[in-house]
Image 1 (cartoon, rainbow, N blue to C red):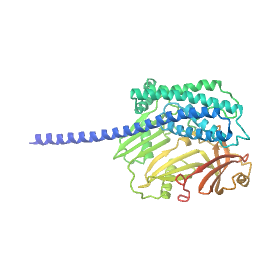
Image 2 (image 1 turned 90 degrees about the horizontal axis):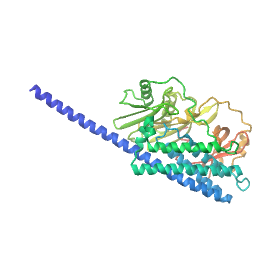
Image 3 (image 1 turned 45 degrees about the vertical axis):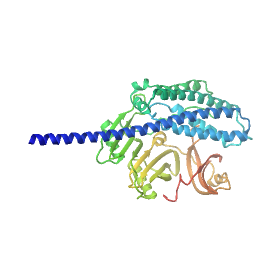
Image 4 (image 1 turned 90 degrees about the vertical axis):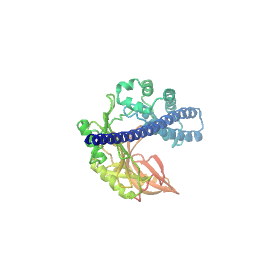
Length: 447
């Protein structure tokens, strides 16, 4: 009798394990399909945007009317920003494609700075026209390589999740056609760099974009998992998955993920020091129980616990019961836009669901900030008189060449629109104007 009872219990246990394994495998497959779809969307949008960019730059080279050229540059700036966002959504963090991203950033800066000036009084110089020609040639090279990668992807049924795995294994990456296509894009920049003039008004010199603020000792996988438990706020460690970047990565890092009870988490930690570059938690968000202001306090405390000091709230927003909070580093009263950190808080229970700190660890250094050469009143005089100024700050932003500059930052309104205006604190020149929307910023609810 005991023998039959034992057999029955073992049978029930086997069936239970089989059912559990089936549902676990199904959840992993759903996650795989979701990630693959996002990668495919970003890749095809990037290819499309690069195609349009090449055509738009070619059109601008044929224009001779300033009133037509300025809006054309605005379109190029907008498309390059979209392409830059698409590139950042691909699983290419382990492959050095910084030249492509740098190209899109420099093209956006060039067209933005040119579009906002008066081209009737200050037309394009010969150097700027040559620079635009170079952008055209580079965009054509990138477009052709992306088309080739797209052709291979569609014809061979290649998966971006396979690309991600190949990037984690340097040997496999060498045999992956999509990876090779992106590497060809990077290699195509070398010929342009060698022949590029060194003294132009707006050059294409690539700045150091490594992680400048990564300190500490190298962590073992066990130590990295302990740090991940702290970052995710997990008292009982889930079943972690951990991978290490390949030998060719600019910054060695651990990619750590878990899945439990319908919740999925992912984070990138640097091997050196275990600094969190980004974190994402995906789960069903329930009915809102936490206010946007309470979410801000949770986000601020979370950053403090992780060692992000002297951070000031820059803007906040709410999307689908998730509070999104952007913080800037404040250096003796000066807001540093380069050192930005974003935190996401679920407003159903106050859990942290996102962290983006890449910019902080890339740019945060000790700075010797000079005193402004002009007063705030003099800077205010440079702002359009139709704008009602609500707030003012000293701020450090990047110029068109990626160099930091000290500015006066003014938040003002005109009619129903809100603008952020940056005036050079040395020359009094209007450096940048950004139009805001109510959905993107809401100071009153969190300050």
